[in-house]
Length: 493
Image (cartoon, rainbow, N blue to C red):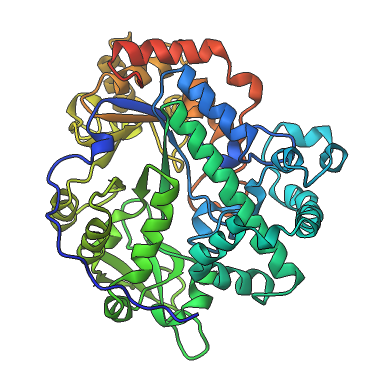
């Protein structure tokens, strides 16, 4: 498909204040789609997602923050997606296909063991793939491909969908490609149903945009000219981060770097479409590794570690200005964790974007940067992120001066035992902070320990599998969270 670069609209002035969605006090919960309860081994759209929206509304929470929703890549990681535009097929709700008459109730019967416990990605995929084919055949017989809704979807999303079909099935037509396109069409339908349910319940959805994409992805295979690749199509330079106090060798992430000159020649059309696609699905986005919009660590592809990389400048300001020109607003959160230089802060502040503060980081040293009283209003504050231990898990590991500072901050005796629901004291401190927006992973509201941790950076296996049990999303927990949000002026209306 030939892409025609868009011309740049007249420049709009950059906002110096909070994006509108972050301008008032609010609160929410961080929970990946995969972590929802469900009968088929992994969380999904449809009833599981819409039920969680209803639970959030009953608690007065105004945000549901997710992780990236693209097709899962290596290690089942949502941050190693094989497409920046497609949705993970496993998130398609089979029960919703039954409601539409594309499957029978007996078709979607599943072993009871899949209904609870950790997410089982491979098992779920093996169960669902034949059912996708069956649903597609029934849909085809009804002449579903000739409907205006499907034709509109293919026209609207064709720019990325053809690349995804080639990457995932090897062709843009044929039976397997037709099934894959049908699945994305149904995912789009179910996502729109979720958006409608969320809006009705006054719950906003926050997505996640990783700055890099995987080398094995439809993004790279579809537009290799946008990436710094060699003649064989392999990355010349890899992404990562330099050595620091946590790692003598730095971190080698392994994504290809962008060929920025080509992006610029097309007026950053790929980036504008990427932001536009996600902002059509979400009310706001967390921009992962926001530092990379100013500079990125470039590591030679032959290197075994990230030690000998170098910083390369990136045109993040131009990209964000184009997106602002296109949309008139930037409902974005800048993930500005780590070593943030003055130019990165200046870029964030130029567009008025809220940065992030992490409660778990607040007591390791004498400074107050991550302590709740010091949060600026234009920030999004978290008890922890998907890369942190749970609040209870981290508390159990807190020792020495850090523990003493935390207990003093909470007004608790120095010998307070772990079992005294300290996590609720910490969540209350977060909610009482000046930050306009506060988010807690669901595991922290539940008071779960390290066995509920979602991801441990640097550990390649066993991550992303925690899943909530439906019984844990009860009225008692909702009432407790609602009472806290009420007293801290964060209730969604």
